[in-house]
Image (cartoon, rainbow, N blue to C red):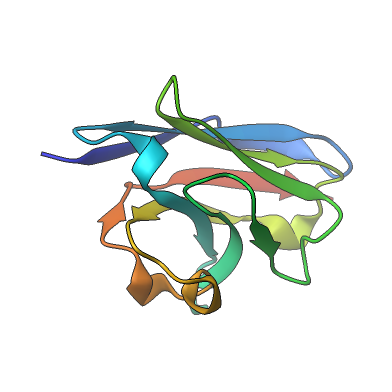
Length: 126
């Protein structure tokens, strides 16, 4: 059974940094693309960042570009989201997702991923 577990969320002040981790079991991360999505109360799920299975290609939403960095460690079967210069509008539940055979044009689409974590809360105070 494939399982993704997020960790690293918490309460921080604006301008601080935080690193989220996504540990996957049941399947090697080397063969999977990974992504982070987030959802704030009363809003639609929003794409944040994604990385190809090879790790050579990444893509980010405009709202986090230049502040967040997604990486993956295939040896440890863990994906990360390094979040820098956090803003109150970054407050949301962050979800890790993974999938295989995802083409470049679909990396930003939640429907392309079939494995999802339970989410971790990130709260940024002003």
